[in-house]
Image (cartoon, rainbow, N blue to C red; front, side, top):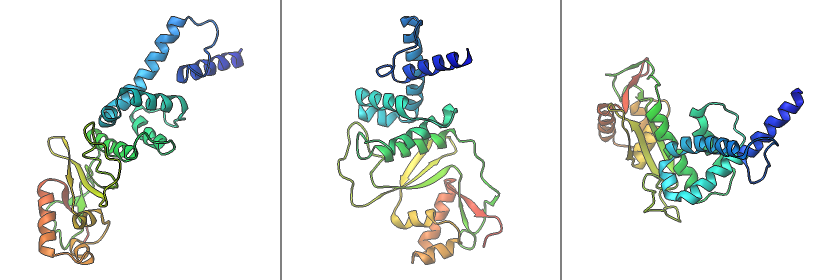
Length: 236
């Protein structure tokens, strides 16, 4: 009896994921099956649409739903958590033929934005008034320094590049005190300064052969914005 029930459950699950390929188990009313199919799919699609709104708008409804249905039917998620569905979608995109060459990077960028918006992470112990040259500058846990081949912050229904620009897109993405997620383009020197892990502010600037006065002004400006929160306790 247990094996029969298990097989019925597997048959129903396969049908709900991919009704075009798998027939439903016998004895279930077609109207009820339709309700289940729509409920399950709409739940997943709604979660992904909320995480990737720009991708959805840019691909257009037919391509977007075709992509989500393929994910829903074929990707074998290892997490039961709805909050991790967006991350599994990025993993899925790494193994399929993309709808557009920038799709994977756009998905990652939108995922970062969503993660920052929802995050309840707390900054580690630090000295908010620490010397940013003598100490080790510490980035807020609500900030990310990112590098992409494609100008992901510009991509949308009205701009869909077919060739990546020669220069990478370097971005600072952060959540401000008003809980709004914002981004700023970074110059290569600023990107390397912020992306560097370890070392005092002076050591980082020396490694970059950068002007220390300008570098300190940048770090102080970012501290005023809450992006740099101070220095690591005990550093310097």
